Image (cartoon, rainbow, N blue to C red; front, side, top):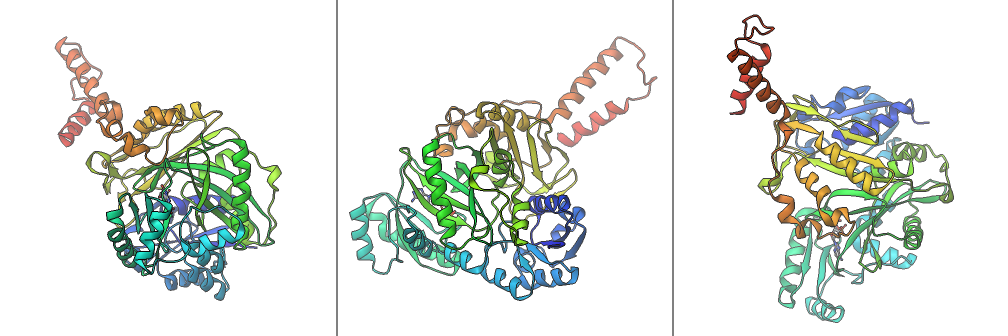
Length: 502
Ligand code: ADP
């Protein structure tokens, strides 16, 4: 049985994994780069190993350094989190070779699902519906044009090795086809070192709906229902919820079965996600599989009541799944907001720097997966996501209200964050009505990006201003204050703050 896990990651996900380790009595080992010396994940781990300079290609992405730290610490398993080495088939193999358990699938599953063309071919064979399109890389551009005319515009030209929204082009006009193929190819080559691209029909009013999968090494597999991830900016998720407001029980059951089939087609084990795209008429198509834990996994945990990291560790230990499909059900509603250190009013520019004041919201049904604190200096080197705010409530309506309250009570000063932008999303009619697709942010941009009326986000300033006013009045009325003629420390504080602010 696994006794000690090295977490080959940083930030909120490293801390999230450690939480389950602690509950299970497993020791945790952190790794950190120069920029992460003061990071919370280092403080919370049982042991920590420095793995090099700040850029991730000199630290978190270097398999040798991770393996070396695992050996030094005597860790018997590695949890890769998401990003970095989590979907690296070579790294999965390398761990096996070194006698260290990789908490994730084997290289066959990662390779098959990591290449979109191979994944499409595999899904078709398994009887899982895929987006209409080609199943081979484009070689002959004339033939590609012919094919596009046959299935009709608009189409997507997509990189087979694509990820993170890169290497993807929407083509609406016949005159753009050739240029789009070239642009997608060169972006794919630059980003992934592989220029294979293929054609997919563009799904109108697309909804991004994904199913959480869990499978053990004995071939048992279940799904843990869906997550709706259609609130996206530049093909990146911003808000996720479960259940999907669009879903019907009939379609859910059918999609869940297809999701399990998709995972079984690659002998998958561990936690994984099958992503589908769905149109307004609830026709759905396989998009891709993510062979790791997702950023948005907490919404599933809240609604289904299962700790996914604990399950990953159980599977890595070779245990049978604890439950069958009929034991699982969705209860209530969960929403997750991704909090970014970025300036929504300035084209979402990253906003690194020192956090002056940090206070996360608390209360019934509120979960906060984060890693930053007052005084923490957010480094430039990594993803600007600083935390995830997750709420659970009995109904969707209550969950939205709870999220609004939680965002209101979330105080971060010193850097710009996306909190106000997220508050706006919670107030947007289409979101509140549950009638939105992946165009939601674009369609509601005017409302979402209009300046929010001032509110006591900087509540310390408002409080101080009121207090100074009060003291001035007292002084004017020649009433002796409790400070006996000395300047009030509060007043001094207020003056200092005002100077800093102005
Ligand atoms: P990546 O692997 O780069 O994240 P995906 O294939 O998962 O790319 O697609 C990311 C997002 O792009 C989807 O969630 C969806 O919003 C949009 N998208 C992808 N393919 C299509 C399609 N065929 N039709 C409409 N939208 C699509």
